Length: 153
Image 1 (cartoon, one colour):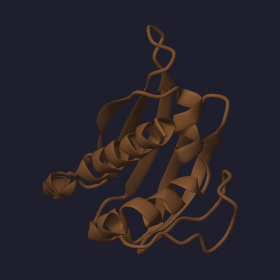
Image 2 (cartoon, rainbow, N blue to C red):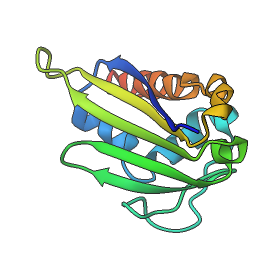
Image 3 (cartoon, helix red, strand yellow):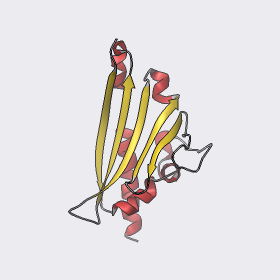
Image 4 (tube, rainbow, N blue to C red):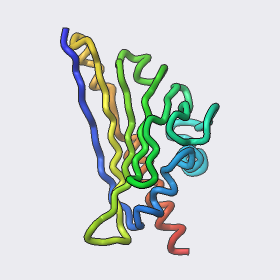
Protein backbone atom coordinates (compact mmCIF):
# COMPACT_ATOMS: atom_id res chain seq x y z
CA UNK A 1 0.00 0.00 0.00
CA UNK A 2 1.63 3.23 -1.19
CA UNK A 3 0.87 6.88 -0.58
CA UNK A 4 -0.18 9.08 -3.49
CA UNK A 5 0.52 12.81 -3.23
CA UNK A 6 0.01 15.42 -5.88
CA UNK A 7 -0.79 18.98 -6.83
CA UNK A 8 -2.94 20.69 -9.40
CA UNK A 9 -2.02 24.30 -10.09
CA UNK A 10 -3.36 27.14 -12.23
CA UNK A 11 -2.07 30.67 -12.74
CA UNK A 12 -4.44 33.43 -13.77
CA UNK A 13 -3.06 36.83 -14.84
CA UNK A 14 -4.86 39.91 -13.52
CA UNK A 15 -4.47 43.46 -14.77
CA UNK A 16 -4.18 44.89 -11.27
CA UNK A 17 -1.40 45.22 -8.68
CA UNK A 18 -0.90 42.27 -6.33
CA UNK A 19 -1.74 44.42 -3.30
CA UNK A 20 -5.17 45.23 -4.76
CA UNK A 21 -5.88 41.60 -5.73
CA UNK A 22 -4.79 40.35 -2.30
CA UNK A 23 -7.44 42.51 -0.63
CA UNK A 24 -10.05 40.31 -2.36
CA UNK A 25 -8.37 37.06 -1.28
CA UNK A 26 -7.14 37.71 2.24
CA UNK A 27 -8.94 36.46 5.36
CA UNK A 28 -12.67 36.03 5.01
CA UNK A 29 -12.93 38.54 2.15
CA UNK A 30 -12.81 35.83 -0.52
CA UNK A 31 -15.89 34.20 1.01
CA UNK A 32 -17.72 37.54 0.97
CA UNK A 33 -16.72 38.06 -2.67
CA UNK A 34 -17.94 34.56 -3.60
CA UNK A 35 -21.29 35.22 -1.89
CA UNK A 36 -21.67 38.53 -3.73
CA UNK A 37 -20.37 37.64 -7.19
CA UNK A 38 -20.89 33.90 -7.65
CA UNK A 39 -23.07 32.21 -4.99
CA UNK A 40 -24.12 29.66 -7.62
CA UNK A 41 -20.54 28.34 -7.85
CA UNK A 42 -20.10 26.77 -4.40
CA UNK A 43 -23.13 27.99 -2.49
CA UNK A 44 -23.13 30.39 0.41
CA UNK A 45 -19.89 30.82 2.29
CA UNK A 46 -20.26 31.32 6.04
CA UNK A 47 -17.58 31.63 8.69
CA UNK A 48 -18.80 29.93 11.83
CA UNK A 49 -15.71 30.73 13.88
CA UNK A 50 -12.75 33.08 13.64
CA UNK A 51 -11.88 36.27 11.79
CA UNK A 52 -10.10 34.90 8.73
CA UNK A 53 -6.63 34.73 10.24
CA UNK A 54 -4.61 31.51 10.45
CA UNK A 55 -6.50 28.99 12.58
CA UNK A 56 -9.96 30.08 11.39
CA UNK A 57 -12.16 27.06 10.68
CA UNK A 58 -13.59 26.79 7.22
CA UNK A 59 -16.70 27.32 5.19
CA UNK A 60 -19.61 25.64 3.46
CA UNK A 61 -20.46 21.95 3.46
CA UNK A 62 -16.96 21.04 4.53
CA UNK A 63 -15.00 22.06 7.56
CA UNK A 64 -11.63 23.62 6.83
CA UNK A 65 -9.08 25.69 8.69
CA UNK A 66 -6.79 28.42 7.40
CA UNK A 67 -3.25 27.16 8.11
CA UNK A 68 -1.45 30.08 6.48
CA UNK A 69 -2.62 33.67 6.18
CA UNK A 70 0.37 35.81 5.27
CA UNK A 71 -0.23 39.40 4.20
CA UNK A 72 3.46 39.98 3.49
CA UNK A 73 3.86 37.13 0.97
CA UNK A 74 0.15 37.22 0.01
CA UNK A 75 -0.35 33.49 0.67
CA UNK A 76 -3.49 31.85 2.05
CA UNK A 77 -3.72 28.10 2.65
CA UNK A 78 -6.53 26.00 4.07
CA UNK A 79 -6.80 22.32 4.99
CA UNK A 80 -10.06 20.41 4.86
CA UNK A 81 -10.73 18.85 8.26
CA UNK A 82 -13.93 16.95 7.42
CA UNK A 83 -16.42 16.58 4.60
CA UNK A 84 -15.73 17.65 1.03
CA UNK A 85 -13.01 15.59 -0.65
CA UNK A 86 -12.17 13.84 2.63
CA UNK A 87 -15.67 12.38 2.60
CA UNK A 88 -14.91 10.97 -0.85
CA UNK A 89 -11.81 9.14 0.42
CA UNK A 90 -8.91 11.61 0.27
CA UNK A 91 -6.72 11.73 3.37
CA UNK A 92 -5.55 15.30 2.78
CA UNK A 93 -7.01 18.13 0.72
CA UNK A 94 -5.40 21.57 0.88
CA UNK A 95 -6.09 24.71 -1.14
CA UNK A 96 -3.43 27.38 -1.49
CA UNK A 97 -3.84 30.84 -3.02
CA UNK A 98 -0.85 33.04 -3.84
CA UNK A 99 -1.09 36.53 -5.29
CA UNK A 100 2.19 37.24 -7.08
CA UNK A 101 3.63 40.51 -8.35
CA UNK A 102 4.40 40.63 -12.04
CA UNK A 103 7.98 41.91 -12.06
CA UNK A 104 7.76 43.18 -15.63
CA UNK A 105 4.44 45.03 -15.13
CA UNK A 106 3.88 46.29 -11.60
CA UNK A 107 0.23 47.07 -12.31
CA UNK A 108 -0.34 43.37 -13.14
CA UNK A 109 -0.25 40.25 -10.98
CA UNK A 110 -0.92 36.53 -11.02
CA UNK A 111 -3.33 34.50 -8.90
CA UNK A 112 -1.81 31.06 -8.39
CA UNK A 113 -4.38 28.53 -7.14
CA UNK A 114 -3.10 25.13 -6.02
CA UNK A 115 -4.84 21.99 -4.81
CA UNK A 116 -2.59 19.63 -2.82
CA UNK A 117 -3.90 16.16 -2.03
CA UNK A 118 -2.89 12.89 -0.44
CA UNK A 119 -4.35 9.39 -0.59
CA UNK A 120 -2.71 6.93 1.80
CA UNK A 121 -4.04 3.84 0.01
CA UNK A 122 -2.89 3.60 -3.62
CA UNK A 123 -5.80 1.24 -4.36
CA UNK A 124 -7.95 4.41 -4.25
CA UNK A 125 -5.96 6.09 -7.05
CA UNK A 126 -9.14 6.47 -9.11
CA UNK A 127 -10.22 9.22 -6.70
CA UNK A 128 -7.78 11.59 -8.38
CA UNK A 129 -10.12 11.76 -11.38
CA UNK A 130 -12.69 13.46 -9.12
CA UNK A 131 -10.43 16.46 -8.49
CA UNK A 132 -11.05 19.66 -10.41
CA UNK A 133 -9.35 23.01 -10.23
CA UNK A 134 -12.07 24.54 -12.43
CA UNK A 135 -13.92 26.18 -9.50
CA UNK A 136 -10.68 27.90 -8.42
CA UNK A 137 -10.05 29.03 -12.00
CA UNK A 138 -13.56 30.47 -12.14
CA UNK A 139 -13.06 32.24 -8.81
CA UNK A 140 -9.80 33.80 -10.04
CA UNK A 141 -11.43 34.92 -13.31
CA UNK A 142 -14.52 36.41 -11.66
CA UNK A 143 -12.52 38.16 -8.91
CA UNK A 144 -10.01 39.46 -11.47
CA UNK A 145 -12.76 40.78 -13.75
CA UNK A 146 -14.53 42.40 -10.78
CA UNK A 147 -11.33 44.16 -9.67
CA UNK A 148 -10.60 45.45 -13.18
CA UNK A 149 -14.20 46.64 -13.66
CA UNK A 150 -14.17 48.52 -10.34
CA UNK A 151 -10.72 50.05 -10.96
CA UNK A 152 -11.93 51.55 -14.24
CA UNK A 153 -14.88 53.34 -12.68
